[in-house]
Amino acid sequence: MADVDIKPMTPENISRYGVCGYKNVEKHEELRNKIQWYKENYPKGLRIMALISKKDGYQGMIEYITGEYAYRPVDAKGYMFIHCLFVGFKKEYKEQGYASSLIGECIKEARAAGLNGVAVVTRKGPFMAGDKIFLKNGFHLIDSTEPDFDLLALKFNDFVQDPKFKIMDGLLSTDFSKGLTIIRSVQCPYTLKNVKAIVETAEREYGTGVRLIDIKDATQAQMSPCAFGTFCLIHDGEVLSYHPISKARFKNIMKKRLG
Image (tube, rainbow, N blue to C red; front, side, top):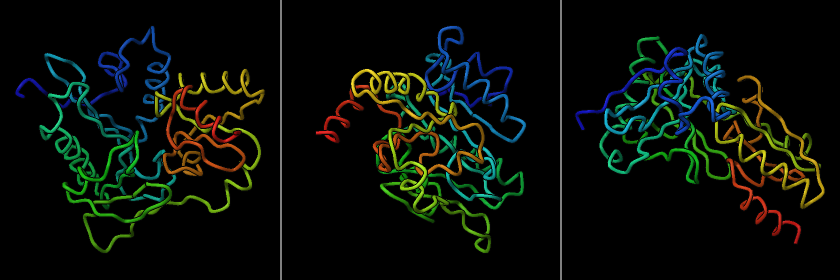
């Protein structure tokens, strides 16, 4: 499609194009929070490259940052780290090679910066890109963690140290052993609406409060007990969801859990 461009998002133009399907700054708190987070982390190397169609507008994106500032529980120092990759609010933009083009922009920047390579967390479940597109672009499986997360890397030099997950064993049974806890970050704008609904439902229908942990920086995100990093729903030491879920899904999970 000749009318499609890859545009770098900056603190100055991001509100014009929106993020993750949110386009109205005045209407969507999710977008306002994401823009503010982007402005704060842009000086640390955070970048979003957006796929923009002259006809249909925003149709995809890749978000990445240097590994020491990754919002995932990984040790990826020396690498560029991909947070998100998405293409195709409209199906005609899928399977057109745009995802590979976006990955290519990240790889090019990582090489120019003299980094060791590019790393990314993928999963076999929902809410995160799968490994197929990255394997196609030269990435290799480096590490895995429960229940379905993989850490992949494209190394520019075979002799450099591999990235790895750094999820702490036993954290769920100690720090999160009692009650309902939600870990979230504005890095993922989809957490806001869903979390509000879950908190209200937990209090109204199950008579329980929710311990809400808002991740403030990459150091805190890298200590998450969940490989998704920027969202985790935990009850009595057990992860109920590794990604944002709806109120209805939360109720179904709790119904099965509580009998």
